Length: 280
Image (cartoon, rainbow, N blue to C red; front, side, top):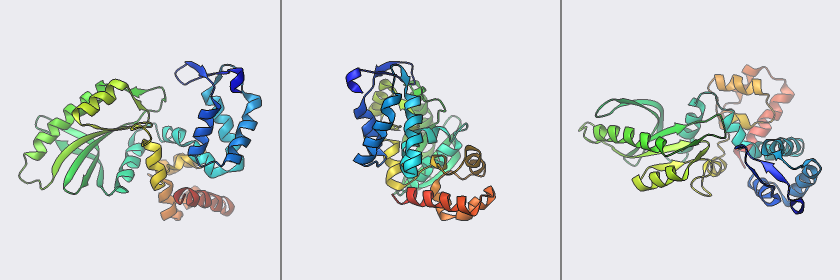
């Protein structure tokens, strides 16, 4: 395929050369074996044409994986699954809070704190070893959106206002140490440079390099329920509306599924997929 120099259209509308190596890498990240990767490429080859969208490639690969290995399909679709947590950012905040808890932090989601000048709503407040971190979560439903330098500039100004008030309060026995900014898409280069310069921790889909959101999700098995291939979009939305965000929550309380009125056979399928995702 690469010898024919096919061009693919990215989400941004830009064209770039189709790369089998990139496809193979994404499949390796979701745990596909070499035999499975060969099968996916062979399946995809007849469908590739010049100008094909990355979205269509994703759909075809996902459809194939869903028929052959649901867990691989779930992991492959992680990025889309996080987008599907919307339209509000609250489920994403819950997901970030869970990630931090598994890293040993005590967390609270949606907290209003007084600053030296005004009050601020903080998405996630995390504490560990006497240090407190104020985390802002920027959720985007559109993959084309990125966080430019204006976002960390704004977040840092809010953090400094809160920090001044917090650390001067004699009633506090903890130290408000640092601000964090987490997004499900990407940061611009200027945003990353500014964050590094002022000491603002940044976490996105692909930043820090090789240690972005996917790696944290994989490490702790914190897959959102929107990754599940055994549930329909409507069933996932019903769970999200009830505040169920992670597959781990279903693993811990399988009775949650009773509210969906699934057949016994489908319930078994869902729980099997959940268990595999939580114990990779």
